[in-house]
Amino acid sequence: MKPLENLVVLDLTRVLAGPYSAMMMGDFGANIIKIEQPGVGDDSRAFGPFVGKESAYYMSLNRNKRSMTLNFKEQGARDLFKKMVEKADVVLENYRPGTMEKFGLGYDVLKEINPKIIYAACSGFGETGPYKLKPAYDIIVQAMGGIMSITGQEGGEPTRVGASVGDIIAGLFTTIGVSMALYHRAMTGEGQKIDVSMLDCQVAVLENAISRYLVNGVVPGPLGNRHPSITPFEGFTASDGYVIVGAGNDRLWKKLCELLGKEELINDERFITNGARTTNEKALKVILDDVFKTKTIDEWLAMLEEAGIPCAPINTVDRVLNDPQIKARDMIVEVDHPVAGKMHLPGIPIKMYKTPGSVDTPAPLLGQHTEEILKELLGMSKEEVDALRAKDVL
Image 1 (spheres, rainbow, N blue to C red):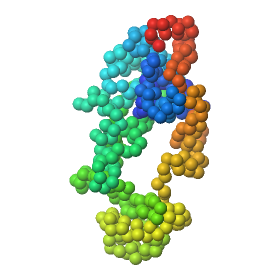
Image 2 (image 1 turned 30 degrees about the vertical axis):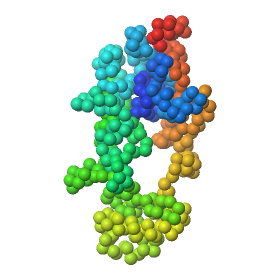
Image 3 (image 1 turned 45 degrees about the vertical axis):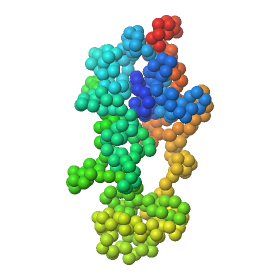
């Protein structure tokens, strides 16, 4: 058994935040029924790169799901969805607020059909506030949420984080919200609505940037790879690239000085405490860079690791995929897609020892499981499904 075995999730989401949330639940056994627009499907089916006619972007976010189509412009489709809600545990959507209400399928309607339903809405700005109807993408909430203002090189322009953290973090918080709502329902029998804002999530992960501003009144800016309050905690220039070093306390600082043959720095007033080192970071970096330039990345990593000093190379994506630790943790998995063939995807980062997740099925083709789902969930026959198709419901 997986922890979410037999949980029925009606997944109305598209692109990234919502599909990522549903994928996490699917990895741990939830029955994810992805409901897509006939003929078009999830917007991300049109995003490259492609393997044949199939989007690798879409496939990376929609494993362990089944796909069916519903045309909500037709009353028959809306009625069919209500019948499905009777059998479901979770409705997951990431439309702009008010969209489901326009269809007559908002939470107030669905909770009357199934009082135990957990309704999770993930949107750009949430269901309340002056921005609630604004459109949003990842880059929009990264910009508005402050994370771009503290990302990039010191003195450079604000920079988007390379991964879509505006979407992904919202997807993670949505899954956490559903998990907590499931626990509450197990205790009380009550369903509820969950409202997750991508912008809220960006503020929630600003961590010490907010604290620093509130304490000292200085607006944080980009610092490159260095930490704002721990030093040395950044990249240093080796003869063939960069080495990341994290000497997070005085004990590690002393070890680093000894390793580098710079024992005189230990009692240097400029560097004697972490606070002093952070104040004088620029001067310290010049000194340490001069030493690091004398050896290669691999030579430094071997020495630093032997001394127990946290360190790392700056891996490119190809090196990440071939890293022995990543392989040992099954963080790259293979699935066999019916059209694209063998595909490699990121694995599951949550390792549960009694109820582990797994990647069992590839992302579905558009509407691949429509008949199967309606037969399983509502007991419909092939003839009934064909009749719905003829009415443009599916």
